[in-house]
Image 1 (cartoon, rainbow, N blue to C red):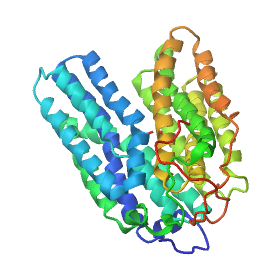
Image 2 (image 1 turned 180 degrees about the vertical axis):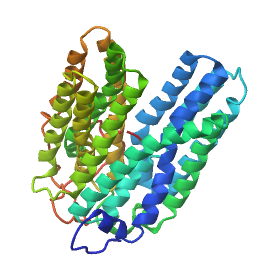
Image 3 (image 1 turned 90 degrees about the horizontal axis):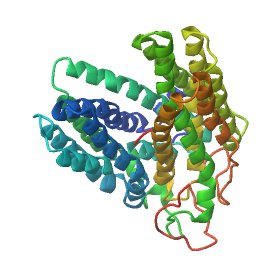
Length: 433
């Protein structure tokens, strides 16, 4: 499915046969994740009239989406995207429509909303991890794969910026439940186009490069968990640090009477820095291995965030947060690359899903923890503590699987296993689906 390319670039990534169609379809489906949270929150608050109920329902929706992600990814690994991903997406879309219908009138049953939201979250299709697994199939060259992952990460960042803006435009002319229905349509149409791509067919179990003479791999054995520990821990720590920025910036602006507009500028700077850092990281021909770069990126996030806490004013805070953002996308992209390098055949989607789950879980934990810190500690200390989480993750040692792929072209042939592989769930080592 790949073509030999002499000068790897972002354009070269998109010139690979079927890459543009597959990537565009995945982005359409993933745009749903950028629109659904705000649209659903607005719908719930209007329907129930209670922020507490809306928050609880959203927490259930998010919790089942995040913590069941590795299990859903295992279904994709075992049965292929078409047989596993499409039913998930259609059920998820139907449940979103049921939620929208329940929210149309005030006084909706809280129990019905909670159960339906939790069920919808449980069915969230892992489009991000599956797309990254498809990239790994399409691009046997490590330099090209690095660019593809960077492009994927930057595009996802933009989706989560554009999604709320799209919902904002919708609610200006229509009820917020229209945004929920739009999210359902996006995920259904995008997933259908994605799974019917020839590139996605090639990533199905038993197709093309996944064939081997040995038994199918399940969880990859104990070496799989050790190899995934570094990228998963770093992904979680970066999630903690990045999520802390939201509330810390709000507190910073409140202390100085800067207003909500200042908050938007700082958070935009974080996104811009992350996008620029991701593009630069993908374009650089790194001589050092991925496991050596990951601690550097994690430490960069932490140190820049700690320095941002010393900012005397808005301008320096914007600069400090943007510098921290420069390391965010490279850290997550490199974590996904390491997960792919460490993945046993038949485990690729799950490996990426563990990183995805770690990011999302870290963001949830970070938001909760920083809320407690802000009320008890000075803001510069809160910034330093939040940054220290990412910096500490840089100390996590990297372990390679015995059969890990080396840098350079990726071999898709599986060596004969030294012991019988076992099927089952991956051992515990995300933002976003």
